[in-house]
Structure formats: structure tokens, C-alpha cells
Length: 218
Image (cartoon, rainbow, N blue to C red; front, top):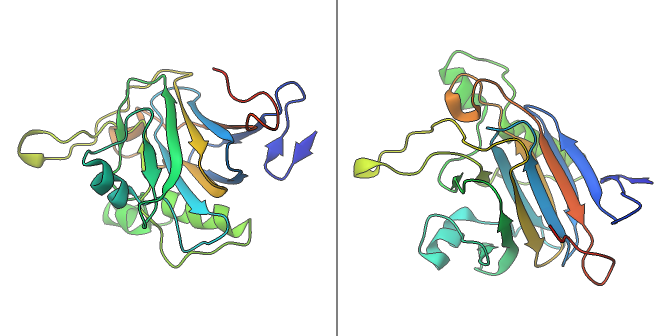
């Protein structure tokens, strides 16, 4: 069985998509459903956005999440929030080394043009294109949650982006607090060690909520 959000597993009701290297995908996630993001080949950063399905003026805000939690990134059991400090996604599980980022914007055309790389694939364009496939357009590209990005602040507040340290199969799990349009892009940076020595794909699996079937039990 298949839906616009990907094929459905007949056993557990999971909807699965593979986000190609330097590509992006959008999926509607209902309240109570869980999302697993998997680094398939290792050392690949994933940029994540979540837009309120009922009101596209509301979305996951990294700055408001930092402000509310008074820390750089949520811990497992805490929530990412929107511009009104209302919960959007709960951070359920993390099997990775735990390196993630909420300080950097999505890579974008201007970033690559500064390096002399005109027309380079980028997460900002992939975000816009993925949403457009669902008939959605936002006036801005919000700052994403950069899962698996190894860029913790150093001495004197310096921000160095190092190679991701995730291994093949490492993943994070999130639970939707409300219905959202979720966008995931596989970071396109290939001129810096952000994604190791090459860009790779990501797995995107959406599991039904407990009332709809067997929820994520990993």
C-alpha cells in the first residue's frame, strides 16, 4: 500500500520515505504520531522543520525553544516549541552520540555563491520545493533543527562545524504534539567536513499514534 507520504508498512502502519543525498521531503504528521529520522550511511546532517498544518503562520522556532528551555538544545523528554512557546514536537529518543544544533540557518544559495558555487543544491531551496509539492509557501525559511550536526560552541563562543560523528543506523525519534507538515532535508554541504567526506541519504519513518495502531516501540 502507498500514500502521497510514502509506502505504508502492512505490519506496523509505518509510512517510510528515503530522503536522497542533497534532497528534501515533506510529510504530514498527525498529532500523536512518531517520527524516526535515521542516518542511513553515517555522518549525515538532517535539517528539520515543522509547520502547523492548520495555521502556516506558526512553525517550530529554534530561538523560542532555546529561550523557553534556557539551553542550546532540548533534552529527551522536552519539547520544541513555536513562536508562541506552544509545544510542536516532543523529543522522544536519541540513539546517536547526541550532537545536534539549533544555531545555524539552512545552507542556502548565498552561502554557496560566497564559495564560488553557483547553482549548488541547498537545504533552503529543498525546503521551499518540498513544501511547494504540498501546495504550501512560506514568506521566509525558518531556521531549522540541525540533527546530527557537530558544532557545539567552543572557547570564547567560537562556532566550528566539524564532521558529524553519527554511525550508520543512528536515529532520533520525535512525537507530534499537534498535526504538522514536517520537512526533512539531507544537508547539501560538500565543500566542508560537515557531512564527513560526502553527502548521504536519510531515512524518514512516520509511525501511527497509539490509538491508530502499534506506535513506535523502538
